[in-house]
Image (tube, rainbow, N blue to C red; front, top):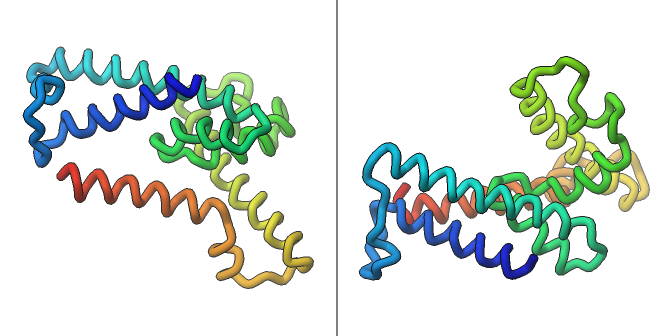
Length: 175
């Protein structure tokens, strides 16, 4: 599982560099850019498939107790800007599964597109709320300042990591 996780991460980096117009590496692996619409479709499909399998891999690693498994498990989600999945999945989805409180449980007859939007937004909101409650408990009071809630919230760290990834892609790869 670790090997696949690392292999897919290296593949993700390779694909980002390959598709960059700014980075020029004189090696055969970086000279095979897709040129036609069909080549882009196949490239994107294969790249997406690798990532999808790694997401399943990461999901399984998140269920293990050791910190290094959780770190390796959150890597695929961080690349998709969904780092909060670790907290939401274990502390939210597993606790509230199949109830109205779980945004990752589809309602009967709900469309796929509505469910995806509801799940993404709801999981972010639930993670923020859960983190705010954790901070209030650790402070021993419900009266905690907004700056404390923002600066000590793991969601803020996740967003900083996501912005760092986006900034790195933009600055170094010229996207």
